[in-house]
Amino acid sequence: MSKLTHIDGDGSAHMVDVGGKDATMREAIASGQISMHADTLQAIKDNALKKGDVLSTARIAGIMAAKKTSELIPLCHPLMLSKISVDFEYLDNGILVTALVRLNGQTGVEMEALTAVNIALLTIYDMAKALQKDMVLSDIKLLKKTGGKSGEWSA
Image (tube, rainbow, N blue to C red; front, side, top):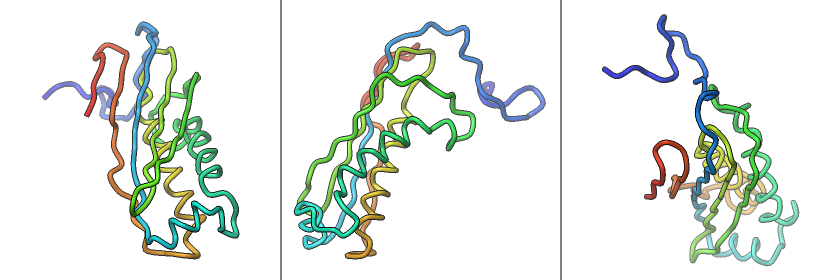
């Protein structure tokens, strides 16, 4: 069995030391969607929810979440992110959320992009749950990552 990167010799969890790695431009793109009824989607489009502008709030939440990933996920490194974008696309039955995260650093930003997507989706749910409680979050995934020793990867 290969050596596990987050487990030391005595089996204890630890954060990987990335200090010796070269800093490279790294980027990750993730996406996910929330499905809902047509009337809920229309209320979001019309900015007609009592809690306010759903997508603006979800964008801010996603950006904040990407910046806080190391506080939420054990063993993730705190990172100086240089770019975070959270974008939305209306679908026939919901909303697609896409997050892009970038930095010039020694470790990747996949977890930050995925965290941004998840929290943006949860924020949409929270703001619209008064209209519909059975919305479904789905298809949360990494679409692309670049940089680092392993180079480029895409789904």
